Structure formats: C-alpha cells, structure tokens
Length: 296
Image (cartoon, rainbow, N blue to C red; front, side, top):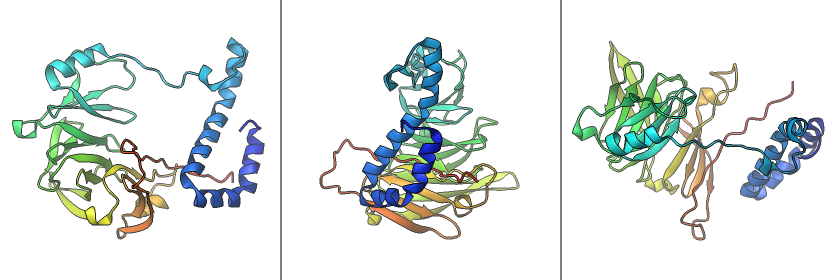
C-alpha cells in the first residue's frame, strides 16, 4: 500500500491467482485486508497535499474523514411533530428520515439543518401512520418507497409528494429492507422480519398505478432475515449490459450472503452460509460491490 500506483497495479495483476485463492480460503479475512489496502492507497495522495500545506502527516488519524453536525431544528421537529426518528435512507438529492408516526422528512444533503417548513411525506390516514422501518429512493429520484412496522409498503411520487401505490397484505411483519433494482421506479425488492423476500413490480395504465408481487425467498431458504439488498450498480455508459441486464443482486442476511439474478428468471448463483452456532448476536452482515476495470 505504500508503493506507487503503478507498482500497486502491477502487483495486483501478478498476484491475481494468489488473491483469488486467498479469497476462496478465507473471504472475510481477504475483504478486511483488501479494504485496508484500498483505504491506505486512497489517502496517499491527499496526505501528500496536506504535507505541503500544514506540515507532515504521519498517520491516517490526522485526516478528517467524516463531518458531524447537530441539527437542532430537525431534532425539535421530530420530537414535537413527527415522532422520533426510526430510520434514514439517502440519495444524492435527498436524505429521508423516517419517524414513529409514519412520516418521512426530506432533507437537502447540502444543508446542515432543516427549514422551518421542510418537505415531508405524511400519511393521509391514521391507518397509515405507523412507524417507518425502511425506505429507498429510486435512482432517478422520481419516487420513494417506504416500508412500515405493520408490513405495509408505500410508493410515493416525489414530484407531487403524494401516495402513488399502497401495497397491503404482502408482508405480515415489519419491513426491514427496501431497494429499487432498476434505473426507474418500476421494480423494487422488499424484505421483512419473517425472512421473506419479494419482488414488487409497479405498473402504470392510463394514469392509474398498480402493482404485482413475486415471492422470491422465504424461511425455508435458511438465509435468515435479509438486512441489506445490494443490486449491482451499472457501469458508466453501460446501462442495460452485463449485470444490469440480468439484474444481479447481493443479499446480506443474518445466516448467509446470497448472490442471485432476477432476469430472465430468478436464479441463485452463489450462497455463502455463515457459522451461526458461534456468531455474535450483535453481529450484522454487510457488503459492497467492487468493480474492477481494465486499464484498456
């Protein structure tokens, strides 16, 4: 990690077979070491800039990697009007904060607090005023999908701030994970606390929106509760090709990590089961896609 960029790329090329073998033997150890190497590599050039401006940087601890700001107006608004926060989901254009009373407050990520009259997605009835447990924005920022404690899923039109579709009687327990799995608002994946995973297909006919559901995985799959759903992001200028055309998705569940495709048919490609007998109850699985691009 301390070498030049050319040396690192050469080492990666020469050590590719050994790297794959190491990953096969101990994937979690490989990922941890790889993440550390990337982190050290990414701060190499910024640290050189800082060395010229502020003196020598001797450790990564000297770099500020996050900025924390308090939001007193948001705290007051949530506690007094909308209920305490229950979940957060993000987009480059929005930050959504779900609350106990079923409201989603929309924040501008460029601002450090909310205005006195923030934009909010508010339930239209007491029946829908149930705690928000999950949410996601569509990649094109036209819609938001929100899951609730009672299992209800709501699709919101962000241009009008109105409910587009309400999905009922699909989940019988809290929704724990939601994500759009295409570049628009039409396809979404939804997972609940009972271990069920469903594909939601939203339709629009003559201005009226509806939905269809496809059951993908249940308790019998023995993967546990799906806590995070990760569709493969399309490569730049390659939408509709490769992983995007087959809709490649990774699932991070309490008992396993699963790799599957959704198109043209649902197919499980790989399943990495965890040893749950010795796992820490507080341990939460997570993952991220790493796209390796050829220099050509």
